[in-house]
Image 1 (tube, chains in turn purple, red):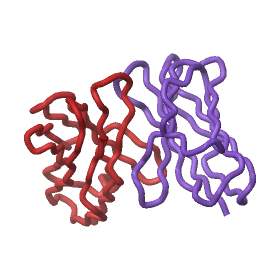
Image 2 (cartoon, chains in turn brown, green):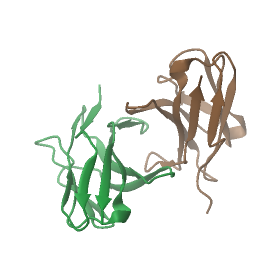
Image 3 (cartoon, one colour):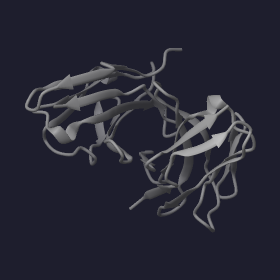
Length: 112
Length: 113
């Protein structure tokens, strides 16, 4: 069974540009989560989808971040325009229920 | 709100040494507790978990016991290996509604031969 995959693995962009991160959850997992780790800080929750609906987006830092989950399958997280403080590692996780979350390898974003 | 505090790293040990990584938490109700591990170049993997007080989670020689009286979930291993070198994250989920994870800052473990 394939695990959670994320694309790209790394992204380097300039301040003001747009970046779109993609997450493909494990097949059949209705729950999809986005988290972010800024260097030296905790991994922080961003938002949670149940199928295609946003269950909880209380962790989204501001309106420069937009997350979607098309048809309840893969999800994208767009940052527009990117700022320096957006640099970090963005993790995606999926789960079939409220039990264990399975994480992807992360996308390392660097905003210059 | 919920929070997790882990000991600062890096923790540097020789192979076969005993490992303890401390983790304490603050949460309302009865959270579930987790240890995740991130090996170099890889994503987070669940190492072990405990869902109620006095439960012991164990996996790959690692153990952690859910201590409600001390709000702790310390990670231990009797004899570490070089391959255990990684970053270890303590985390919790609340018992209400959906299971959003709250993480500690992570502790890097370096094991030398």
